[in-house]
Image 1 (cartoon, rainbow, N blue to C red):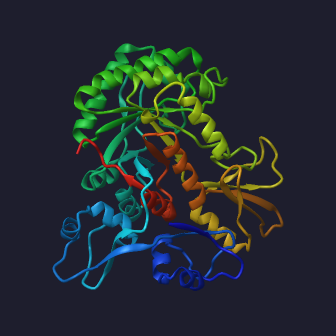
Image 2: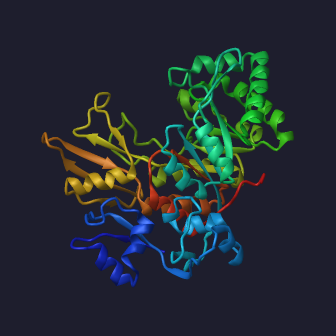
Image 3: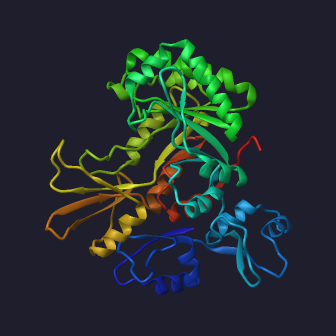
Length: 429
């Protein structure tokens, strides 16, 4: 696999010819919204098929997989035009394998809102081990605030992907509520009621994992939070349901701030089966323009985490979005707009901006001037920045990666991921 960076004067036809590949191969692997408009600095993922199969009358995807000692999931990964489905027709050409030595294997989780487009979800499921619908809330008495999750859980189960129930301290208003979390953590009876309600929902809906995400609880509640996570693990471990806890991106134990002080890395790692490092949002809505997940900052969080827990317990958080900041930036006033990684490239094309790449942050960015004459700066993710983050997970022997979130398409990410790594399946299957 190569990652090609578009240069001035490049055309898709010319790039394909130079690599000795049909242009359709580049279109399929990158799913370009407008193949006639390449952007200087844009990345293209180049894969080299080794073994192909031409579909015959009467073939099914499962029969082809069995005959060639592979799986339907791998065929779906190798052939993005299938969009996670199994419909094939005679004469269709499927890639069975690529010229690529896998660099390892990873468990892959992704968060999704119920509003995700069904076709996008179906296309993404073959690349996941777990799917985490966002989010279930709770009341101070331990009653669950339900989520309309059927459109996520059912397709995940049909695709052999483990659905994970996400429990957060987000109130019905949609904001993290520190008071709500603190009330629960001081009320053992409410916790036990909540455990019972979680058990009922998991049984009814088919959830096979639990992900806990309490934020801004403060240092005084760090011990109680770890105790609560321990209770959850004791309750669900006998059923083979793992408990994951989301951790703020700390770089040292005594890091100040309400977001960080409530997350005792060592205590929470000992209480849970797995942890998710929320390694994103350095660049965010109200920050100065910068990478959402600069690799040097992500590395610092991972290196600290490894002093408190083993790597095989850790999921590395990866952002699936970017931000557009108007300039000049005024702290507390300037507000960035989020956009998808594909939208960022499309925007660069519309405004004739060349995409640059920050080697230190391992992230792409560009500047442009809008119709009102105001300058903007955009940071996002591309195939290079994703490869760097995936390499970090491999370098440190982490269990896997977790994407926030899946509601925006990013085809190149899945191409890079599945080409370089085997995606492990739900171990409970």
